[in-house]
Every structure is written in C-alpha cells, then in structure tokens.
Amino acid sequence: MLHRTTIPSPVGTLTLVASDAGLVAVLWPDDAPGRVRLTDASDAPDHPVLAAAATQLAEYFAGARTAFDLPLAPTGTDFQRAVWRALDAIPYGETRSYADIARAIGRPTATRAVGAANGRNPISIVTPCHRVIGASGKLTGFAGGLDAKRILLSLERRDT
Image (cartoon, rainbow, N blue to C red; front, side, top):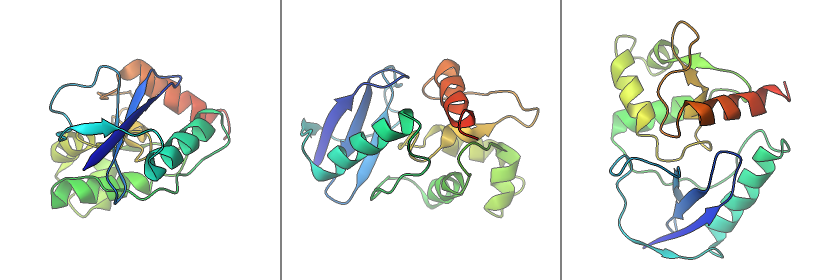
C-alpha cells in the first residue's frame, strides 16, 4: 500500500509517496503522467517515511542539509537502479555529465540510455538527477523543468 502527502517547496508543491519499505517517489507539480507509474496512494502525512522525507527536504531547501538519510524503495529495472545509485554518488554542489554516469556504471557507450534512466528517476532531489548536465555544461531535460533544475543547482552552490 502506498501513502502520500504534499509539501511546499521553492520549486513548487511536491508530492511525496512512500510504502512501508521506504520513499517511492518525489513528484513534481506538473509531472508527466506515466513518468513514474504508481498505484493509488492514500493521504497519510503522518506516515513515518513521509514525515522524515518532508523534514529532510525542508532542511535541504533551507540550506541545512547536504545529504538525505531516508529508506528508499524506488521501482525500476536493474539498469535504471544502477544509474540511480550512480546519481546518489554525485557529491552535493557538484555535477556530472550523462557520459560520466555511463562510465561510472561500466557502460561507457550507454549515454542515451543513462539519460532515459535519469529521466525516470522517481525520487527527484533525494536521488539527485538534477546534478546531471550535458557534456557541454548546458542544462538539459529535467522532469521538474529547467527552471527547477537551475534553482536546485543554485541552492547547492550557495553553500559550496
């Protein structure tokens, strides 16, 4: 069974979804239907995983948290989960290219597939897909929109 709550943030109202095993998704205000496939969730702002996620995200947005300590339960293919683990390894305030991530998971020619897996990351912000940029240094596609990506990267750079 899934549980959900919403929280305000500098990048819009985020929807947090959790199972009893951990955080399943952080969804954007205008998230594309089907980007993250979920079953119905019941409102449960007091669910312990959701309460912890809401607190830690508020701390992150306030500049008081640089890493998350939450149980995570994303659903994805083995390849997607490998990409998401590589995203988790990107230090706060730093960026990597899609090619960097492809090399990190031992699939140096899989840059496009890495981009697709990055776009399917269900736990935005917590698993920092916003830290992945194009090889030229330009900001590229982001489920929350490029403005949200700029805000998140700027937030992290203020403390670095």
